[in-house]
Image 1 (cartoon, rainbow, N blue to C red):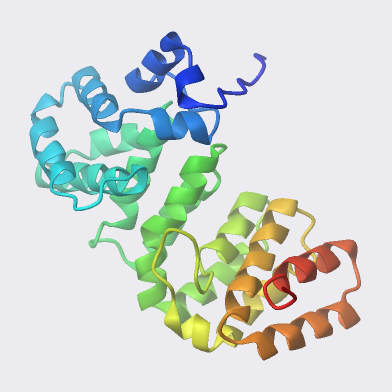
Image 2 (spheres, rainbow, N blue to C red; image 1 turned 180 degrees about the vertical axis):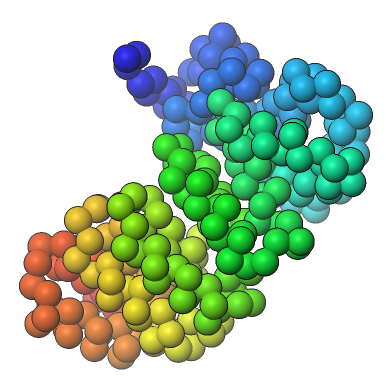
Length: 266
């Protein structure tokens, strides 16, 4: 087993051969610095050449060029949605399948968008398919995949919360974390879910299931969820934290509560 690459601390420190491999899609990014350094246009061009789909390049890049704000995330979404549109039109399921198991993490992020933005799929089928990406070993894919279905979760909140409640019992900590992270009232890099900002109690069953989770990754997400809620409903969060400390005085719950109350205690 090879030792995991640590990755450079700044973009200019990335060795040229590593950057070339990243842009060819041969390897995963090792950290956020590398993730931000990948030229997604070049990666797309290389991917399409490798798979004899060069006719997809121009229309997808036109989507990217039309973006008002070009960031890693907006380009990621534009490419994913563009590939979905073209593959659907050409009944090219084989190509979409290749994306979802590609060695490059950013390509798997595009693949997540081909599911999350596929309007043919019902909500439960979308979530079922996106769970594979929620289990991904790469941080970038895990972050992007919940963003791809966030609009659907927001629009179909009751059904989503019911499905995701089951995910809180999953063996994989990444799946349990998805249940919390994808439903955060405010979230990061995404639109807020107003119903949860005004009435965070709607998501309480999911949080209760995770209030003493053994995974720090999950604990951070639950703490952040409640911290989000504290900005609009501080009394609710204080009450829940008091109750949890009485009923579940574990070190895991104590950690979550401390994180949850950080804005209130400022």
